[in-house]
Length: 229
Image (cartoon, rainbow, N blue to C red; front, side):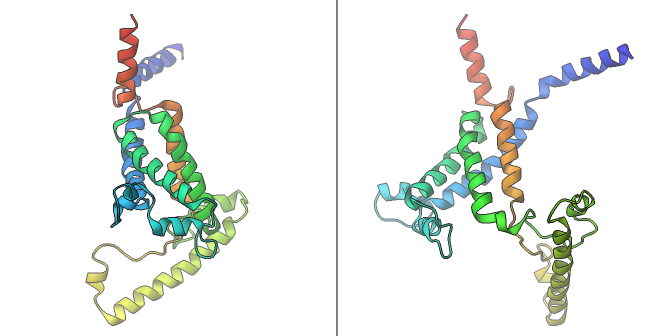
């Protein structure tokens, strides 16, 4: 038994040289998402007048942040949209190269919390509504008697009915091959799923950093350590 434990420890010790790979994969997944999300919040993504105006948040995004009737109804929408846009845009580029990884993860986590609680929360968990309650992750939560799980399973049945009607209409009126060429139809539930997953990934990067050998953070820290001797 001791030999097995020793062998296990030796294998894990050798694999630790690759422990930067998960952080690298997280960064490569998160970076494009954050970059384009931030870019589309800023005036540089569209037409704007004046050099300095293009560094501000887009007018439509500011209106969405501030309007309480059809938007988020947040205070100081100009400032918050500006901060959210640049945090995501610049933070995404920093994540891509692994620079200041822990630092930029903080405002990005905050934007994910805001997105989840103000935009997606009332839609539940799923980003895409599952159509089969038997294969839905909510089935496991229902076994554990988690509140809301049974309602989610019932919603899957309703989604299945509506998807069936959509497909029957397509079959009846034609263009089935064309309409399904890029994938089958689905119903956007717009829940917190993606925001929560991105938050968890950012939280992991906050604690682990950009990853050994695969980030500029590692090499700058290594260079500073060597130069100190």
